[in-house]
Each structure stands twice: as structure tokens, then as C-alpha cells.
Length: 184
Image (tube, rainbow, N blue to C red; front, top):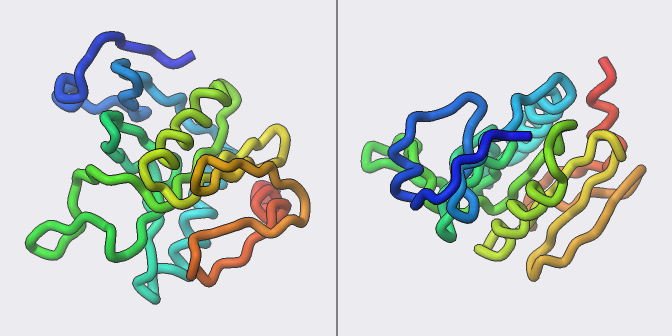
């Protein structure tokens, strides 16, 4: 179970020191995410690489691991946040901003063994309710991916089923391919 600090405002939370692993601000509480383990870390790296390999050269989108996103009165840290290129916050110098006060276009969560599925699903539904186009909840134990579409419509995918990605992204993945990355 992750440590929880109750009764904060978002402004108070933002003044707190960073934690490792990261803490999220949800419904007035600071909730620390669990420390990623091997399978989780490997999938996070593989997915970021796969997405960035096809999206970055075309300046279509960019995948960020463990990025703090503040929107809708909450601060969440999806395992992977994907932003369309033109929505990436940029400083006047042209460098990427440190604060992302905007929802991701695609949020990906990888369920850790000690995470509650409903808490992680709640984060993805919060994203969907605030404009995120696509969400994935990857369940390592079940080897399945719950996909959240606009309007908070959900679909459970397994096996050789093709996975939806952002519209216009030239990336083709199937569910079993994601889990095959775990075998070295």
C-alpha cells in the first residue's frame, strides 16, 4: 500500500519536496506510487522506445516516462504520457517545459503487483474525462490490456488483438507482442 497524506490543496502539494518514487495528488491526497520492478521497468522502456521510434522523427508525438501532469485539479504521473508534438509545453527558449499543466493525449499505466487496479483505472478515467484520447492499463499478471477510449468506453484486449494507438500514428502493435518483450 502506498503512503497517503490527506487534506491538501493542489497548491500545498506542489510545494512539497519531490518523492522517489513519485507522488500523485488525487482527491485532496498525496499518494506515493510504488517502486517499479523489473517487468514494469522493461515494458516502460520498450513502449517509450517503440512509440518514439515512429512518432519522434515525424514530429508527430513524443512519449515521456513518469511525467507529472497537472490538470482537472489533480496531479498524476502516468507510467507513460504521450503528447502530440504540437501540444508539448515549450519554454520561450524552445526547450521543453518542466511543468506539464495539461492532459496527455495518450496515457499508459502498467499495473504493479502492489497497486490497486481501481486506483490506476481511476487515474486513466480522470485523463479520459479531461480530454485524453486514449488510455491503456497493462495488466502483467493477466497478460491483458484494458483500453479506455473517448467517452470513457473501455475494451479488454488479449492475445493477437491489434492495439489502438493515437489516430495518425504509424505504429502497429498486438497485445502478445507487448508481453513477449518481457522474455529476454
